[in-house]
Image (cartoon, rainbow, N blue to C red; front, side, top):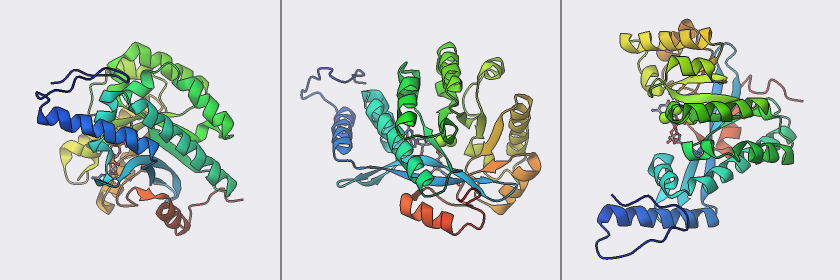
Length: 285
Ligand code: C2E
Ligand code: MG
Ligand code: MG
Ligand code: MG
């Protein structure tokens, strides 16, 4: 395996650059160019309040419209962006884009829509994250409560003490934080108890067939119990069927996200979807 290299690191090109390494390098170069050419786009997936059926907000999920590769999903380029350090620039773009969108929604009267963005480990441990976030929120006049950060369990647990410091700063700024893919990492419950986290997102692998697979049902019940005990909100991701939804409601889950409601959609289609939701505008002026 080639050595990790940060920005500005000298790379030595030679004939021994193997196939995988050269593919990685060309992906890095393409990603850099994609930023310059503004080929990234945010898609929006609605979050549903299971009690009212209303849309409470959305998760922003990045897509890369590559002229050469077509529509590229984050799983195919985020790991490389993390490894190369380019995630800092991509992450900054995502945060700014999210703020712009929140400002646009506010200006059109959709004042209650919350937006969450995914933040990778390198972005999260960056000490300047909170200041930059405050700056952005100020510049776009966004209520901090409307922009949520999603961190995976492994991001939070990788360096728990550092994570607690960052999370306390974020809480001080009123930025909501959720733990993504919950149940797939190795959370220590004693750490979880100390973390100022607002929401737990149940990983979709446990939501899948939760109405018929008893193992998943047991895990979901346990996660809901933990969230209740720690006074955290809970959201199920990857809800695809009515049966799963019914089970989740009975298990005490109040929010859901998944193909049952809508896939992640480009902005215009998301807004069209919203317009067709009977209860989508609780705060419409
Ligand atoms: P995630 O944050 O856990 O996002 C959920 C993933 O599940 C999304 O995949 C979404 O399209 C997919 N999904 C939603 N509903 C359903 C469903 O009902 N069934 C199934 N099978 N899948 C569903 P996507 O968009 O490919 O994103 C994958 C991961 O990439 C995300 O997982 C997140 O960790 C990461 N990611 C996405 N956008 C960003 C970003 O802007 N920055 C960073 N650092 N990571 C991102
Ligand atoms: Mg997420
Ligand atoms: Mg997730
Ligand atoms: Mg995931």
